[in-house]
Length: 80
Image (cartoon, rainbow, N blue to C red; front, top):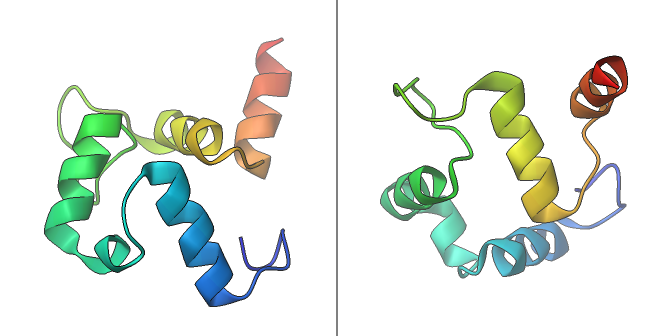
C-alpha cells in the first residue's frame, strides 16, 4: 500500500483496517488477525488443511482490499 499507492503508514493501516472492518489497532493483534484470516480464508502463517495457501490466499487478499498483486495478475493472465 505504501509503495504502490503512495500512502504513508498510518493511511495504509487505516485503508486495510477499513476494508477488513477492524480497527487499525486490531491489525497488530495476532489473535484477532488469526481469527479474521481464518474467517476470510486469506491464509495463515502456518498451513492449515482446508484453508487457502499461497497464490489462492493472495488472490483473496487482492479481491478484499481492491488492490493489484503482480503474481496474481500474472497467474490470472496465464489461466485465461
